[in-house]
Image (cartoon, rainbow, N blue to C red; front, side, top):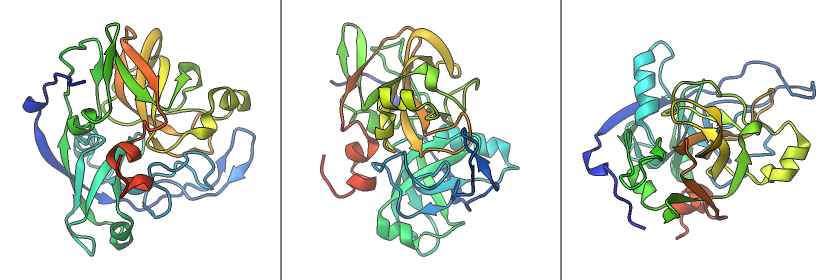
Length: 295
């Protein structure tokens, strides 16, 4: 289905950040009371990519491939980076041994305010902490002319065109790997906007994990959240539907879990999720674990 959008009027601009140094905050306490000291946020992760499981790593909030950041003191620039960069945007290393390497934005992580970029393995191994990466930021303000009650955010227009979207009964049909209920969503609730950041799918209840198949979550999966409205922040609203991309792996601390960055939302439920095992950014764009494979 060809969707009418305002992509031809969207501003495309450069934003840049540096490859982040990993951080470690000491012991993290699990919901069962177990203290853990595991690898955590940031850095260059050589063996975790989009398409890999989001559950089961010996790590906390692991971000696939490379995480980018700006100095914590530069709030306006951080907001610009994290709002303007969109999932699916092209990125390029501008200095160091990996200069010229091309990558793809795969997610945005709230709180720490990181932007994630996938690179080919050979380029990832040349990349260094502190290397500058420039992003061709395009997509902020994207709208669907035929679906005014569906908001789009955090999505490159080129990726939008490749998602296999459709229409059924006045609703936008969106391929997703699974549906989850709003009741299991945790950290990240209460924000007043969803044009950056993420919120977490809690895995602390074994019965819910089994019921919804949450142990099958993969980094890069498109996931529908039922009864969740992300129009002006993340809230519970009966009948609303939102869709996000899994951007980081599972977590230790209470209320946390694999993170979801919003790409579609409808307060009035004008989104119809369609289950597809291939609804993953790695499969769609040929990156991460699907790099080199044709779709």
